[in-house]
Every structure is written in C-alpha cells, then in structure tokens.
Amino acid sequence: MIDDPAPENGSIAAPKPRSYAEAGVSIAAGNALVRAIAPLARATRRPGADAELGGFGAFFDPKAAGYADPLLVAATDGVGTKLKLAIDTGRHDSIGQDLVAMCVNDLLVQGAEPLFFLDYFACGRLDPEIAQSVVAGIARACTAAGCALIGGETAEMPGLYAPGDYDLAGFAVGAVERGQQLTGDRIRPGDRIVGLLSSGAHSNGYSLIRRLVDLSDAGLVDRLLEPTRLYVKPLLPLIRAGDIHALAHITGGGLLENVPRVLRQGARARIDAGSWAIPELFAFLQRQGGIAPAEMLRTFNCGIGMVAIVAADRAASVIGALEAAGEGAVLIGTIGEGRKGIEISVPPGTLGALAPEIATHDG
Image (tube, rainbow, N blue to C red; front, side):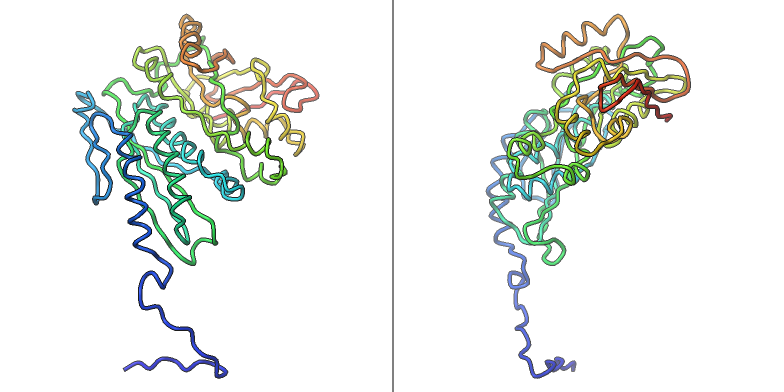
C-alpha cells in the first residue's frame, strides 16, 4: 500500500481531481464544439468527400473527384506568430483562412488541386466561442479553395499552454494527374516571371513585425490581420491548360529564397523590384526597423504572394486571365541562363535603398 504524502508545514493539501473535468479537460465542451462545427464542415462538401465529422478517420474518393491516375500531394503548415497577434487583439475570425491558404497554396505549386483539409486546434482550456470562430474561418477558406474540411482534432491540454493561448496546424491533400505535375523541368531561358500581388504580409515575418508595431493602432492591426490570399481558383485553370511552367509560393524566406526552390539547374531568375508598387505596409516596416533591402526581400513577400514562370509568348495572356479572375498580376522579371538562383535589382528609393542594389541568393 502506498500512503499519501503528508502535507508540509501543516498546510491542507489541495483535493485531488476525481474527474477529467476537474483536471481541466472538458469532454462535454469538446463534444459540443464538434456538434457546433459539423454544419460548417458539411458546407464544404465536394465530389469525393461527404465531410461528416466525428469518426476516427475520413474517406476521400479520387475517382469520384474525376481523377483517372492521380498523384497525391500533401502539405502541412501553421500561421506562425501571426497567431499571437490574433490572440492578443481578440480577433479570431480570419486566422483560419491563413491556415488553409498556407497549405493549399503549397499544393498548387506542385500543380495539384486541393481536395481535402484537416485542422489541429490545441489549447490549455477550450473556449468554444473562439474555437468555433477559428473553424468557421477555416471552413470559409476551404469552400473558397474548393476543398472539403473532412476532419480535425481539438486538444485541450491544461498546463501546456498559457491561459488564452492556442495553436493551429493544418494538413491538406491534393491531386494531379500523373505527368501533369509542376517540377520546373519546363523552365527555359527567356521565360517570363509573373508576380501575383499579395494581400499584405500573409503569414510570414510576424516575429519581427510584432517587435516593430504599435498594436494600439487599430488601422495597422487591420492591415496586419488581412488573411493570406488564396490563389487556387485563378491559377488552377492556367495550370491545367499548360500555361504555367513553374510556381513559387512566397512564404518564409521571401522572394530571395522561395523562387530558387522551383528552378532547374542552369536557370537564373532576374527580378526588378521596381516593377511593382511596394505596398506602404512594407515601406512602413522597413522604416520602423531600418531593415536592409536584402533582409526585407528575405523576410517578407514585399507585395508578391505567388510567382508564376511562363513562356514569353504566353505572359500577356496569363496576366490577362489572372486580372479577369480578380487577381493583381504584373510582369516582374525573366529567366536567364546561369547558376541556379536569383538576382533582384533594387532601385534607389525602393525598400529603403539609397543607391542601386542587387540582392542575390543561389539555391
């Protein structure tokens, strides 16, 4: 028999929890949340998925989605410390789109159509209202991206997270017909680089942003919480038409580090940072921190959220199609021969440059 230890200094020992709820985990609250978000998931249904929640797993039928010989593509991501900004300001309705966009935009870079999405929501103590607001944003973004929210996990872990904090992770699976995936092999010297405009800082650089900005400025917070843009519906038809040679999602690492990831050996990207209007948000952040142009291009998207590499004779029509779909798109550079990597010319007055600069990254 193991005796309970005697309390020290004659103090009265705290009563031991007799249930999971007394230990800080409410199974009832979790079940209520599942019931509340089930209609949100059902609203994301698409061919191949019924989007019912509550089971141990969820099925998806690629044949029902119209695929004959698909390759599956998977991606996972979070939203970084932008999540802390949402928590600190009590604004949870848009962070779900950031989560979905960071995953499905990555699938798109491989030429894949997003098929389904799962989320992971972890907290110290479940606040059903906050969780439902987050998942509602996830569901809206799934609908906008054409993928089904088919499941997820809510984890209540007292003592692991500070009061009021929560964490998010997303998992997406897409498909592309065998032989139609984007690998960068079609890139040729003379190809044009088209930049798709971002909706702001998207979900990168927020550890630096939060040290530079005044969170009492509601207008600035609005701009910083603008959700990551979803590029699926405008780009997928162009991918399937064969108009896209390669795509690069401009996330952590900015233009400098993400564009080289999709280049083949012997291809060098040359971009002119003066070819698009740098949004004032990035100019403001540069001034606040006195950040060097190359560091700006390595930390933030600087106004370009996705890069498309296309044949020279298709660039104008691709830009026209993107603009017709509601996207801002601009010609920002070309592909040349040379060491695999990127050169970005920065004219004076752009991103704080006092004289012409060239930022480079070999990948």
